[in-house]
Length: 310
Image (cartoon, rainbow, N blue to C red):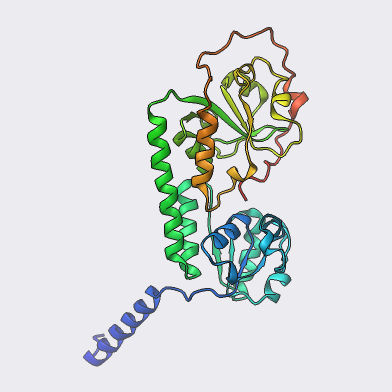
């Protein structure tokens, strides 16, 4: 059946109006609940802290200026009721198994949820810009991203003329978890002049055996754990590690592994750690093996990885 001209015109106008509505940007969020400390830090960094009406407990601990805000539970157990009581017009979180169900329940109840991934460098920077747009601070977010990219180019230039350093970044000691391929931290290591042997693992934060670490023979171990034992003392249990022989087992701040808005600072800190003078590039002669077996340092069935880069 052929449609008459007036009907065709009406259909076309309705379609155009619908397309126009679909292309309109969402309204600026004025009441935001953040369920992730990295996203909370981004909001504060771009000047959108006043829009926050509630945060997770970890965010409140990391951001002293936000401790007066209501908290809505931990990273793994946020309270649906506590979030709803704050009447947010936007809830921001990092997609993952722990918060997927909460995000779905919020959306069913009509709450707008913005899920921002944070594994790769592009995801972190893209999340920062997307968050800025939603809270009316797009310019500030873009400026932060430009600063990070500028620092990246500068550090890569400085590292280009130096021999690369085999470096492993440890995020948990027992069981051993390291930074693997694809994460933004792996990208920072490479930009700073590091060669990451754990990039052989396909996961961004894989569990590894101590035997693998010995075989990988890192010249530097960057220890971002919160273990109270000093890194040199802990890793000296395996004297055949070149990093131990060279005295290059270094404690680094745990916030380096957080995908927040200051990756330029983290990158420069990593670059300084890898550029320390006096690092030999040869592998020392291996002494008679005295390392403990893997079972002594967390062998057995794989455990859940440490909370990485919240």
